[in-house]
Figure (tube, rainbow, N blue to C red):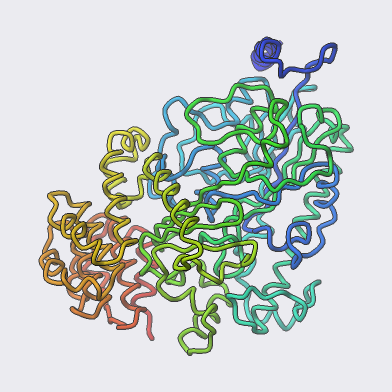
Length: 625
């Protein structure tokens, strides 16, 4: 008997003992066995493209057949709208802003929280054969013992006979890069879906290019469906179909412009179907063919597999199982809350937190002067993205279509039942103030309770926190809460916020000064009483504070920010600090005052220039207009 088999036998014995005393074990006289698990993950597609989830989607017969033998989850969410952050959440069952994995692409790989391992490790220790084919893309250091095999050749066929398995496979056929086609394709390729019949999102211009892009992408969904069908046929041929839970889902939303990389529903709301095997239907309270509107998110997927396998769920994670013998369908149906986060996406910075409760979506934009449409190299490789921005600058967009390129509100509220595409912001509507305050307070308490590390700049976290982010957060929880309180001054009328802003700018704490200046930028010209104070910060030793002061004064047109911010870029030897400063450069270049920066590479640190994200920003900044 192998070491793995012995470990699995011991784990099974422990499971049986636990089940006996808890009353959640198999029925008397039944034989304890372990189910298999497969995750089929399609990259970069939200729920909006399949008729199974959305009336404007297309038929996906294999996934629909899965739903007929399983559960359709109408409200499943990635907690982040981009792959490395979403996958880090999946593999750890932990919120990324708490564990230092909230930035894409990662500047630093961080350790798993103390006492927690990537969840397949627990399955493997219980005797499972664990395989990944083949994308990982974690912002964590991978602990030992996660996968028996992680490669393009990984497959359940390689396990020992009779050994239960967890197999994960990711498919890039629907990835964002598939929309980086050349214009010539429109003349040679005929999509299965007629472009004239494509539903155009309200935020998008109704153009030939957008219609073709939408139709072309729906063809990629058909390819995803074919892949799902092929996996089910393999299982059936192996005699394993009715012993295997199959999860099909998207790794986050996307991928038409304004979805992937943004904390809207098309960036976070993913398709999810779980096929229930006949042999293990007793482990699930749902009937095959059921549908639930209960909320589940990526923090919950790992503990769900552990629950179904009868493996102990570790303490210290953020997720909870949504399937298992001790979990009733009513418990799942009653789940109505999810949280989301959006920080850095490649070279583009943001700081957004979201909360959904039932049909209401609350968005907290901590730096609302940063428009969603701020340049991002990879996003704008898509022709439709470029067209959208060009039409904005040409004044050819409606109000809803322009919103993506304009400053946002500090908070937004949407009734998604009446307004599924988030076009009518209810944050200022007196009739919705009760729900606004409820969601605002819940989200604020969540951010403080994690605690949310993003209230320090990423460069500061890299220097001080990333060796043990969770411990750093715990030790600085009070200060983080104080920084959040300063950030939330932007939610008040200026007259009520003024004293708090002054206190933050007068504080002997650089990060309170930093957030005080950000709040001034949120208020814009209302914050005129702080113009002189901001000017004093232009000579700060802290280059980020210097940049935020110049950014504020530049956004309101009081002082040209070019000299101060250019000198800050030239002075820093920190590539992540430089990336954040360059974000402000692009904001000010493309803003209403159209400041002109000319950054000579020869004046920048060689360490800074090694950073690809810096090179991307410089290429855009120094382009020929």
